[in-house]
Structure formats: C-alpha cells, structure tokens
Length: 356
Image (cartoon, rainbow, N blue to C red):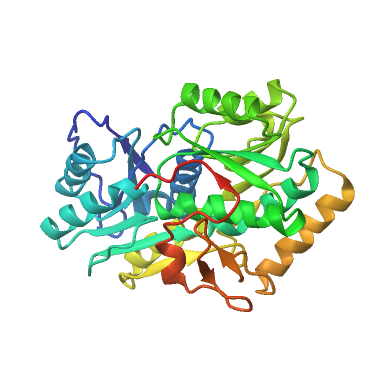
C-alpha cells in the first residue's frame, strides 16, 4: 500500500509511484473530506473506508486524502489538484462538493469521480449515499418510548434534503409511539464545530428537550447531553465512548464495502457511472448496540430494524402531513425516491425555522 497526504493549501508532487511486479503503476485513489479524520463521526467513517481499500488491495492502490476542505471554490481547487496529479478515481464526500466535482469532471473526462450524497451525475461521475433516515426513524421510536417531556432536540447542520429528511424521520418515529411528540431544531450552519454543537445542545436542553440527536459530526452534543444527565444519540459512528451512560445508539455509516467494491471495479475495468442509495438491508446503515434503555425498548428497536431490513416498515409510510396541513404522502402509500431525495418541508410537530 502506498499512501500520500497533502494539505488543502498546497499540493506537493512527489516522485513517480513505483511500478508493480506486473509492470503496472498503482491505481491512484483520492478522497476529499469536509472535516478532520479525527471528528469521530462522518469523516472518520469515510476514512475507515479508505483504510479498508488499502487493506483489500495493498500495493495495487496508492491513496491520498485531504481533510477539512471547505465547500465551495476551495473544493474545486483541491479536486482539480488531485485530478491533475494523476489520480484515477476521486471520492468527494460532502453534499457541498457536488458542483465542484461536476465542474472538475468536465475538465478531466478520463478521471472517474464519485460524489457522496449528491444527485448530479455524468459519464465519469457516480453518486452514492445511505438511507440514514431509516436509522433515524429507529432512534425516534426509542426516543418516543423514553422521552418524559415528549420533546427532543435536533442539532442540524444545513437545510438540505438529507438533513430535513432526517429530522422528519426521527419525529415520525417518535410520533409512532407518542402522537403528541415534538422536536425542536437548531441550525448551526456547519458540519463540524464542537463549540457550536455543544452550545446548541445546551440551548435545546434549556428549552425542555430531554433527548438530544444531531446531524453534525462531532461527539460534542453527546458529551453535553451526558454532562446534563440527558440521553442522546451518536452520529455516523459509534460514539458510545464519549457518553457511555448517555448514548442510546448511533446510526453508523459503513462506507467500507462500497469503497472496496468501486475501487475493485476500476481495477478490473467494470466501473460505470450510477447512483447508489443503500440502507439497512445491504448494511450501509447500521445501528450500534441499544443501551441505556429498558430491555423491552431495545427489543422493539431490534425488531423494527429487522422489519425495515426486509421492507415490512417504511419510515415515511403515509399519512405524512406537513406543517401547513398539506398531505404529502397518502395513507397506505410510500413516497418514491424522487420525493425523498428532494424533501423540502417539515412535518407537523417540528419546531423551528426551515431556511430556504
């Protein structure tokens, strides 16, 4: 395995990669991260996927990763540097990297790109995401059983469909147990800022939320909940170590099998552009152990997980009513992926603004 790392500020071109025994050079695979690999959440899990690629293919691949890349113009510059430096396959791992990825892909048609959580594709651009909302629905059901106040607090990053979908799925889970349950949303407008995330958790707890969940990337909300004697859910990875008496479960993003498969397809010449949106059934979404709750609640969560896996339960099965009273999903129906992927409304019971 050959790995290179360069800072977002500059690209240092090193010596040419050594040829393998068969005369071929290693496949150069790049990863662009929105946060630090030590965030213990979103970026940490993507980096675990990089390590799985290295373990699977050894010296057949040369990996490069760039962490803490800002969404926007800086991302385009970094992605372009990777492409210009001879990378054959580049994974860009945040929604805000979508347009920069497509822009650079047009300039480098022989390079293959994969963008996480986006929807814009091209002949050399594939997209992939996970159905996080399935795990958030399970978390909401747990919260519905455990919340004495009937009110949860949700620390949200940006008002994009992925985040809006998660808020709604969590509350639908709560309301399946307690129809009067509500959820207060605080926007922090960042993926990773432990200070802002902690402050948001404190504010939500002060407003009466006795369950905290998040769509941000650090364990700060869980730690804040633990210090306040409030239960919480981890995000993206198992954050149990940061709040052993507070975490109920985490919704885990397991990218490793996908990365190993897609790199293998480039190596054997079968790669093609497509969209992948997997959930609990294939294992891209996993739940960490159900703890700090009564046995019967954990058993119900485990059963629900199995029902979602085999398609017996859909988190957005109708009726789904938005805050304006409009029926978005009729009773007995389930939404198609197009509606889920573009979700731009809150359901009844969500407290807080929805920026446009």
